[in-house]
Length: 467
Image (cartoon, rainbow, N blue to C red; front, top):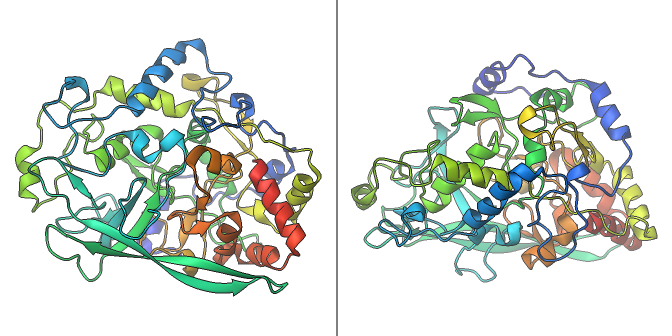
């Protein structure tokens, strides 16, 4: 049995629902029939490069103007102050990108650079040192903070450059077919404020796809605790865990649902955090400029007074990201897809990639409430083994624990994003490599895939590509 450290136990104690495993809830969801309407009533039959950009099918008319304006804001290029459009100036002083859509191209998945040393266009590097910040989250690196800013406005130096290099690790399927996995390492160049500390912890993170986020936001905390089993009390080898994180909007601890380590509780936090962390844009939720102590040039030009992104603008981006449609499954009747679904279940993949979830009741989003949908995730943290460990804890998430990645829409990655690179740092060059990186709680499922005959492996991949 795994025991949580005292700080994690203290965080879990902040909610009375902690560790409320309910096997009947899991069994009921696993028994639910799988339909092609992956997003429930929000689903749309989309299969083009724009498949992640449409409003949900059942969105009420009253939100459509906000969705349209939010889309414009999402694609707006922000400029430094003073800019030609005062409502969209305030970029920086340091930043990674100039627009939300720079990382989320077509609202899709980011990728590492194609060549070593090339610009990092849709991937960033999280930073921390051992210890916790005032909210029991990751402790930022002195002078550099918790995310490397590789660009700066005129007169403000970029913090430096991150270079991702790759090591090939050979392996073989049970039938003797060879494969190779690539493992990343991160190094830094052109650091403006001296070398990183020896105990720095780094984690490259590609941008996540944007579809179905409103449904995830509406999943109740009680449901997640009912599915969680951090001590594996049922003995099935799966130990899903809820992350409990800081909610900057409500100024309290809350259940995490978004991000690679479920370290963000809601879309207001997600969007305001990205505005500040990625573009240097302040909001009412995060009104202080991102200028760590020791970055004097940054502090000198930092804007003061009203937030650079108004509450109204942030709300429009929330509306947009909350109601992006989920594409319908394609080819569900094909024999290879049906065989692949059987292989998926036989391998036990559904233990973490739960096919079915439900939203709760919320009058603020009646179109998203009481939905049964098929994201293929339980939104919980799972230990994925040392192979995927990034060495960087995040609230309750250990170095090797990651939120189960949703699989809906994954078969459209190449069309939408122009590549097929997967996992949190884009190391996997295809879905097979992504599976082969699974370890820890997913070791048995990975081995089930590795030992399949080639045609059965192809069937399983065909099923994933249909989602």
